[in-house]
Length: 344
Ligand SMILES: Cc1cc2nc3c(=O)[nH]c(=O)nc-3n(C[C@H](O)[C@H](O)[C@H](O)COP(=O)(O)OP(=O)(O)OC[C@H]3O[C@@H](n4cnc5c(N)ncnc54)[C@H](O)[C@@H]3O)c2cc1C
Image (cartoon, rainbow, N blue to C red; front, side, top):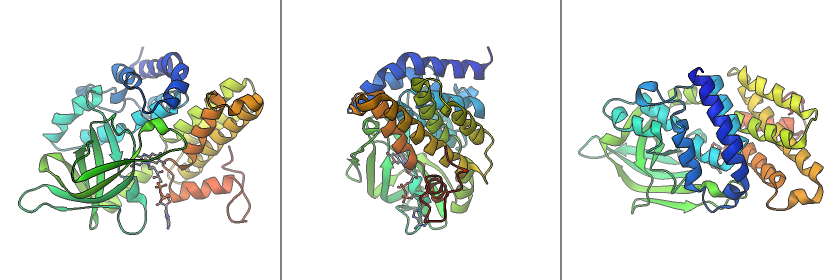
């Protein structure tokens, strides 16, 4: 079997045989039980996008999409903790030696697990996190905050993006509380076991050996907007799971169309495709809730969990254009009237 096909099949098997049967247990846990993330690491999936020379699977885009869909539709909480890991893998693959060689193999195997703290770079206004050169060496000093960092307690390192004037400085810091780095748990209405915290830094020193790179902010903005498809497959996974629990309905065709819209999305259409996928997940979860009657709303039901997960996917990795497309699809776009085009 070709490596990509094998990767997709392994993820599918883990999704159906391990994660989906445990999804309620994971959802109700305080923190995702370690054994589920270990199973993803043992299957090589922490190295999904890593280069083969470092032990990664180097999956192509369709394979990565199918893995994200399968895991997202089995236990969104476990998938969400896991998915944070891949941009640190990509960043390390592009990092200079010796940083790359020090970290990449362990990241690909999942021996070292990573989170991210950079979504706030997308916010307009004063930067949430700033870095300045450390006096006397090539390190940096970090100040400010990251509003959301997922996986605290389950990850070893965090890839932080902080503004330094017109640049972004990328730093790989330890995922540990210290006198200059404090984490406070965010009380979430969905995916509470994802252990998502707000991180605050005060004069936090990062040595040169942990500086992943410095690049113009506008270069990052361009890269960021080019890579927005993948998160959308989490929504397709949730929608597809609802459909399979519902049995045959017209929603199946909408899932197929939503997946195809993501597959073929360009930079001009990706916001619509993402909005379409997240609204579709909400619609499919609502149909599952309605079809199950009152029992659907009991806390331990798949329908109730999937509805909360679909709600979460409306806001995760939302950008202003995705938000506008979502509101339009939901008929809440300021009275201009929905086009229906992005509707799930
Ligand atoms: C539970 C949870 C866990 C998360 N985990 C992580 C994580 O581990 N790491 C991480 O980096 N991120 C994480 N995120 C962040 C996630 O990607 C964000 O949901 C997403 O980036 C939007 O962030 P926000 O809602 O805080 O931003 P908001 O401030 O609400 O902004 C949303 C979008 O609107 C735009 N916007 C806001 N204000 C304006 C304005 N005045 N004018 C024009 N545009 C505007 C922003 O640029 C942004 O694109 C997490 C989010 C959630 C909800």
